[in-house]
Image (cartoon, rainbow, N blue to C red; front, top):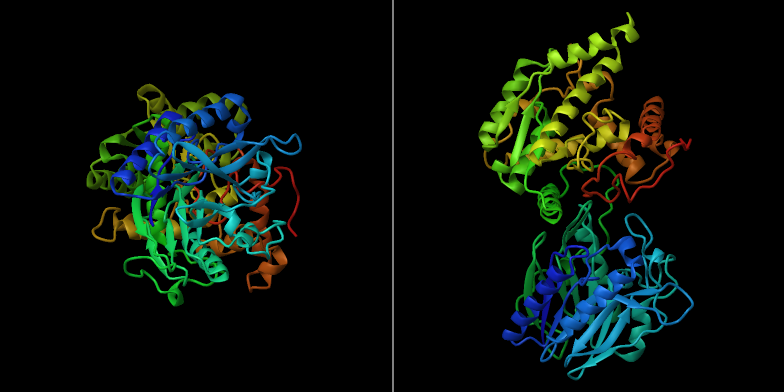
Length: 560
């Protein structure tokens, strides 16, 4: 049996484009003599559709798309994801479904059982879990079709009451097919392989796993679709962060034609769950995820050009380099806005970066604007000493200039704040926290340095001086980040324990960190939730990012 996996990048609610992509892949698979072609979870409408699912018109368009796709499922079977209405009054109105189309008919529908409600997921808000499980018969084979998390529950997950594959095994299937929209994080490739392998080992059946690719604002889908034979050997993996169409020959004995990519003994047996921050872990995947996300955000929103404040520091340098890779250097405008506190090398470093990358840049000194603010505020500020108020005027002046240029010429401002700064509140609302998309907001400062090294892996793109010098906001004479924050080598490790691992202060202190420092850092994290709540969407690359996947009270008081 020749089975195709169609790993595609969908645009939520863009039914015309999504349907065309799906039909194009079906026609190509038919030309190549395919028996089945498999698409990813909710492929018809894009994932996650969220509250679009509450619009009757949206659901009608999903059904219309399935009807159109069905006409092309004549000589080939098509498995495609879309919502399905729940005809029973009890429960939610919809199921998250996999449609099995053949001979221009709907031959079967599988409903998702295990509806995730953790991190970025909220499927219980919209969908009813499956209440019956049936195999689909096709060309003498019995197919067990499941959806995403349905294979992440091997019967021992307390979040879910039923293990779908246990139910489907009662019908003695021959093949497992799973359609997924499984988001990327820098540990997830290993996690995914371990789960799929465990499923294959438990049931002794080959697995065809089709995952979505592309970015939906903050959520990144890496693709990396998988094919395992019944002996748990990895026999196929589609490329990461790109669309792909690939066929595999499934033999009657449960093996797959062609060489084994990884024998079962080399496939991970357990999820990758780092106990401490490894700043260079899968850094090449983080790079690829961010580049794809910037590209997708602009394309799907209909934008072409980005603007970035270029300070001569590591965060803006990495952001500019990533944006140039994603959008092309001609489409990335850097704006240097030195004040009287800016060092000469900062301007020189920022200019050198843009000259190397070939992106356009402007220099707009802000001293006169800053002085005008201070002059007009003098009757109110009187002779009070210089403080964070004067520092933030500089940052907000820069934000104002960037947004003015963005508005005038149709740019989107990319934000350069990193996760360490966002965690501790080391940023100015409506100043350096302005922007339409947070490029580095899920990367700790140590990871930003690793990204810089990766960008420079073949030649110097980011000037070495930017990497080597002590980080500084340059908002007062001689200012350094270290004046306000603990050393990043310590800070990031504590933040990782608190944010990613959800360790309380007692547990973190027990790891040997200074007790007063832990209390100080955790207090900074909690008291600055109000800032993060007003921040732009952040590209998610870690298992726990700020944004939709981390919901804590703004006015909460908790330190453990």
